[in-house]
Length: 518
Image 1 (cartoon, rainbow, N blue to C red):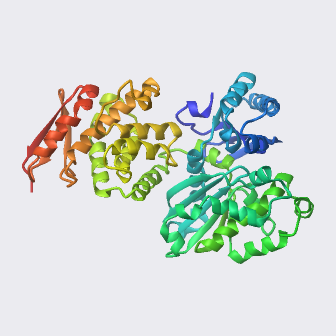
Image 2 (image 1 turned 90 degrees about the horizontal axis):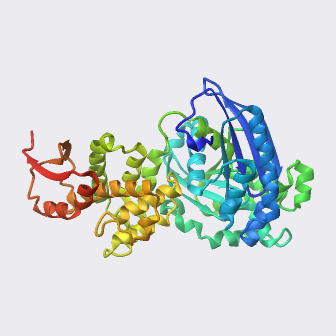
Image 3 (image 1 turned 180 degrees about the vertical axis):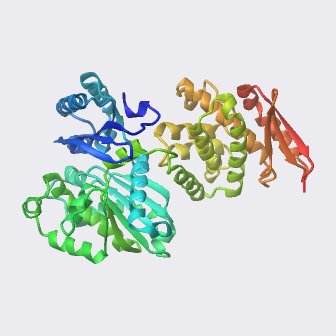
C-alpha cells in the first residue's frame, strides 16, 4: 500500500521514504511512536547519475533504467524485511523532466512492485515550506513579522519561495540546479560569470514583489538543500532539523576560502562527497547573487531535506497548515493580473455559503471546498488579457501558473471550473472537459454550477449579497437577501447562469427578499 492510498497514518507506525534524485537514490525506513517522536531504523543510498542523461539528452537511458530497477529491488526487499506497508516513493527533477518518465515508472512497477510518483514542484514547495516555517519559528520567534526569500537548491532544479509575515506568497521552480551546470557545460568550462549569466537569463528578480527589489523592508535569505548544508558546513555543521543563522560576511569568507579550490581539492580538504564538491561553488554563487541584488539582512539555514519534509507531511495530524498559504498565493496571483479583489472575494464568499449547505447532501469533500475557493478568487483573472472570452483566458493563465498547494490534477480542475463560470456549459466538443476522468467531470460540473450562481449574484460588482443566507428546502435552493435595492439585474443573470446548477443538483433557485432586521 502506498502512503497516498490512505487518508492518514496514526501513530505508532513504521513507514519508508524512497527519494529518486538527479544523482542518487535514497531509502529511509523510520517509525513514529505514540508521542509523535521519529526514529530512523535504516538508511541506504546509491549513486546513480540520472541527471546526466536528462539534462543533456532529455531522456533516461535504458542502462540507467535497469540500474535504477536493480537498486529499487533491493530497497523493496528491505521494506519487506521490516514489514513496512506504508511508503512513499518519489522522483524529483531528473525523472520529472524526462520525456520517457512514464516508461520508467511502468518498468519500476513491473520489476519491483513499487509505485513511484513524480514529486511536482508545487508539492515539493508545499512540504518544504511547511517544515521550514515550523522549524524556523522555533528558532526565530519573530519569523512571522519578517519577509523572506527561501531557496531549496538541488542538483537538478531550484525552488524559489517568497513569504510575507510567515505566509507564502508565491513559489516557483527554475532549472538552476547546481550539478546541472556541470552536466550542461562541462566541469572545466563553467565559471562564476557563466553561473551569473544563467541566473540572469531566468530574470528571477522580475518575479518578486517590488518591495524585494526596492528594499522597502529587509529580507531574510533562507537556504535549504544538501549543497547548502555542505557549503555552510565548511564553517559550521548543520545537524538535522537544526536552524543556524549567518551574517552575510560569513558567507563571503567561505566563498573566499573555496574560490581557488578544485572539486578534488574540496573533497580532500573538507571531506565532502564528490557530487556535493561539484555543487557547493554554484550554490555559493547563487546565494551571493541574491545577497547582492536584494535587500537581505540575514541568512538562515534550516537543516531540512525533501526526505524530512515528506516524513513530516506523512506523520502530521490535524488540518493542513498550508491551506491558509494557498489562499494567500491565489490572492497574490489575482493581484498580479490586476483582478477586482472585492468582486472575487464576494463571489468566493457566496460560493462557499452555497457549498456548505450542499456538502453533506451531495457528498462534496473538504478538498473540493478548497478548490472552489481558489476558483472563486481567480475566476476573472483572464480579464487581464481581454474582457471578451475572459473565462477562456482565465483557464489558460491558471493552467500555466505555478500554484503550490495544488497538485497538477487539482490545478487543472480549478482551471476547468473557472472555464465554465460563464457562457457555454461543459460539452463533449471541449477537450479540456472530455479529457477528464469521469469523477473529475462530475466535480467540475458541481463546482462550476455553484460558481456560476455566485457570479450571477454579484453581477453588478456591488457586494449586495454579502449577507445572503442559504437554505435548501424540498427541491429548491433558497437565497434569502435583505432588501436594500432593486435586484432585477441579478434575477435576470441568475436565470441565465443557473441552468447548470439546476441540471447538476436538481434544484430550482429562488431569490427571497426579506426585510432587514435591525
